Image 1 (tube, rainbow, N blue to C red):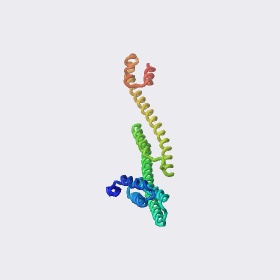
Image 2: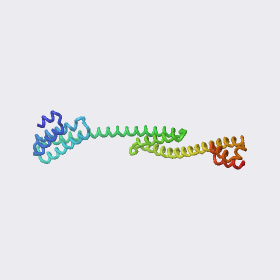
Image 3: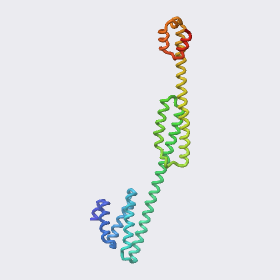
Length: 238
């Protein structure tokens, strides 16, 4: 049954059958060797490391039980030591792969963080050059979205320093730009008020009697485009 399952590549089913046969007689060398050979073979397959480590642990456990229950002879001892060496070598090979994968993963994270920090620095320049509130708000949305892509738990010391510096610079820049837009709004308001004043005052001067002698005409003129200041000046001319 075991051989049939193994041939059909039903690894987990074959493992169950072989383990069952061994556990029913822990001192039986034949069932032990069939089981541990299978576990060691699968632990060396080019499959995901989680499965490889599982089968290696199974082999190690089986070796421990067999060592404690078998009738010890020179031949049995040599067999145990050979299996032990195989287990250790396989464990080292798996650990080497894990280390390599971890190193590659860290490099990938570091590159992504560097790319994101570069993009944030670029956005800082765009925020500085924003000409109006709409542009400014659009860049702030991009900054928030981009910042979420940073893996803050895996920043290098250099990257962490850059991130902290950018955070401080963005805070100062955003505050400065908001003040700038407030000033722009005030300038625009004052400019319009001045233009309204000039327009209404010129109309008033063209025909003073029309407005001095008629509150209706005066208020109609004011309502067509002037501030309260203009109205006050016009009233004083009366």
